[in-house]
Image (cartoon, rainbow, N blue to C red; front, side, top):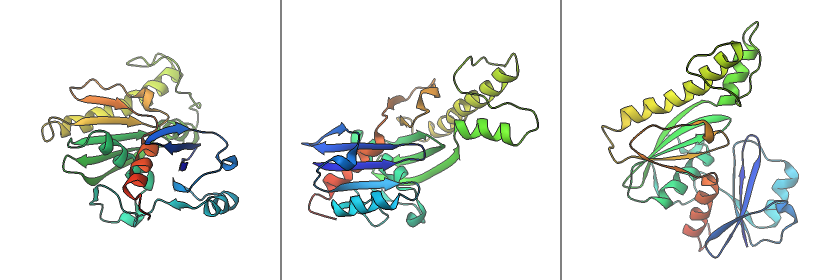
Length: 229
């Protein structure tokens, strides 16, 4: 079994690759595996690093061969989760222009062209960070949760904050799409990340919601390097 690990800001996603299919797993450190691939947006605990090393796992890094071209000007600074998600989307819809939106602690927007080139993207504060910033950097605004009513205009402080944040991220995405459609009329959109449910796209593009997009990318990269990294 090949283990795939995505160390995010809030949780770890794990899956094994068996006969070309992904199977999500828990308690991965209790498993007997045959190597694997991992990526992380932050330092990993030394005990976990040692376990992965002992079990032949490799870190997805800027010099890891991938099945798409990387046109990012500073690949060594690129978050590998972003690149893995881009590979995952491309592996599902090759030959299409793709916008990959990962709505986690940060919201990332990444573009892959139809000829299989990753061109980079943008990073914005995630929904939780926006709520937290309003609470911590003002004198009176409360910390609001994303769950609840989201009117067009808030009727009280709570709904005003929630609507401002949630409708703001929706309009943010709609703005990207409005600029991209004239250039890439057949654009496809991939949504992933814990807050992807809050994105409502009223657009002419086909949208795919893929919660495990980073793991799918790691799986495709593993298959691409089946003869070894």
